[in-house]
Length: 140
Figure (cartoon, one colour):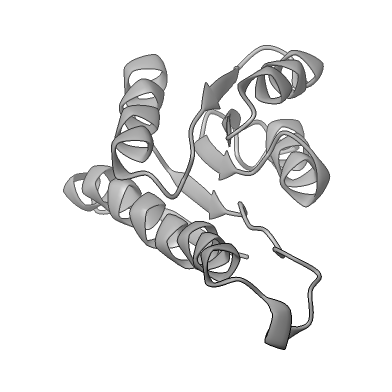
């Protein structure tokens, strides 16, 4: 039995500088995967990648911005040569205001990150997965 079932798989985890995303990135790495930690906080992504160790790449990107997502996935492909796994984990709760006090701009930011970001990252990933007829996308 292989003690590292994800040996040499390439994974992107969004929102992975802390919290659940970081735990997912650590687990994937412990199973043998090379992991790209994609996060809006580049410094935190760099720290997280350093803590996980070799085979880990930090990428600063706002998942709600198409050009940043495309740049992030290009960087992953440039570094690792392919993509096998995407974990769409980036997300925010937004304001803790009651709905009747919630500003539309705050609500739109939640939608941009939680929905648009998932779409943009999934689209970028499948562009690399379809040609090789292989890949996995998990959306949290």
